[in-house]
Length: 538
Ligand SMILES: Cc1cc2nc3c(=O)[nH]c(=O)nc-3n(C[C@H](O)[C@H](O)[C@H](O)COP(=O)(O)OP(=O)(O)OC[C@H]3O[C@@H](n4cnc5c(N)ncnc54)[C@H](O)[C@@H]3O)c2cc1C
Image 1: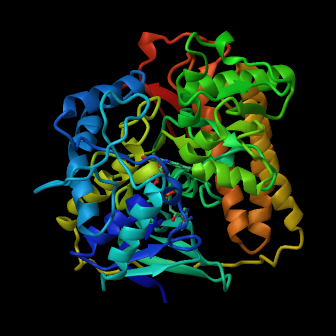
Image 2: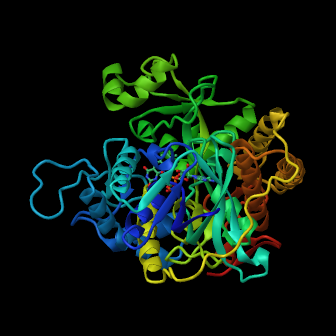
Image 3: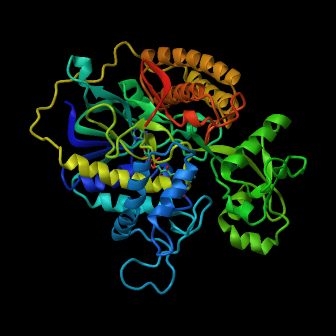
């Protein structure tokens, strides 16, 4: 028997939880999430949430900063809605118990938030909880959701694919999803009045990433398979400095360290940033990431060094206590030794095309947060705008759905998951090998700087890997690893397709074949199953 619910939410990061909390005022919510409820990109967010919270700031300034970062591709209306929705969302978080750092002496009304100034922002506007903002936001949202009797959370459950009536000769509408219970290996059929993808980013498509293991682009891949429109996948943001250590995966070294005088060096000790930008080590994030990538490719080294040993040890320990401790754990005393670093995939600016209520191009299917493409980020994300987007869009989608929820509709008759002639896998090594191949080829061929030749090679290899994965998928029982592999291969295909169709360099997409920005190409890249990627006006 299928499970039924009003709202099926796939993912328990900031977007999914913000939606669930509000949707539960109108209907029953089932949240499925791959691992523990808090495991998400959200949990690892350090910096904070951008919102206009002080008299010294203005919506106009936040809008202008966002649009400037987006390199000509932001949708003005999406920017305005997200920016103007920010202060209320911060208040909501405060009301459910999120503790943001405050300046002493807060009086009536809004507290006096201790707002950070971040690169690209022209005013202090980043609300934060020390350097663990995401953890605090996730904690508060999970606690609030746990108090809501209409929200049910299924941890260790991985959505496999969407259920569509078109398969049964009905209209093009999404009515639920198949969901794998990781512990039992059983695939559940879940029917819902609305399905909300809140499955986050896809950092795992690259060899090095700041994202946790859950970030395998499942929502984008599922939506693509279902026939939804996907946009702007070529714009993947890389963080320039992630600790390079075999065991210490995805530990981010804040850019504030360069702000305090740390110097990027080659492994032989040569400082190199001045040769790439007159601002040297203070160049913006994308330029720094490109410079490191260039030097790594030129020298064949697998990392570069970030050196803060010129500063007094007490200053370093006091200013960067978290990084000092974490590096020490791996045997690196940053007061005496340079830190091995690599750039790492950080944030997916593209995703499933949605309107400003989170509706995708498939009726019944919604997408919010990092898996969606609303037009807010354009070709490059302004730091700290992504938690903001998850909160605003979670709220807007819940509001829009409340007015259209139709509980009188009978549940459709759909087939349960069929195992067919599948058997338990005997060759898990194929999965690990293919995981590694996709991530490595994406890093080497479709990373920070692209070229036509490398993109063509990547496309050929990904197509071959997809054939092998499909064969494996139909032959053996599904597991989370296999599902994730199938999804990262699809995301890889989409990034390559979008990147290949953009014949210019813009924002986060940089190609040696078309090094300049072409003003005529200030268009979104859209792609759909059966329709090749192409550029289209807003
Ligand atoms: C290290 C780091 C630092 C960052 N710092 C900041 C910052 O300071 N400010 C800022 O604004 N942004 C920051 N970001 C980006 C920001 O954290 C994310 O963009 C945002 O949290 C995404 O929220 P989300 O709800 O869309 O997805 P996530 O928080 O990633 O949640 C996705 C959820 O979906 C689940 N899921 C995925 N696939 C499936 C499936 N098939 N079935 C079931 N569940 C599934 C996952 O398990 C997870 O629960 C940072 C990101 C990282 C990695």
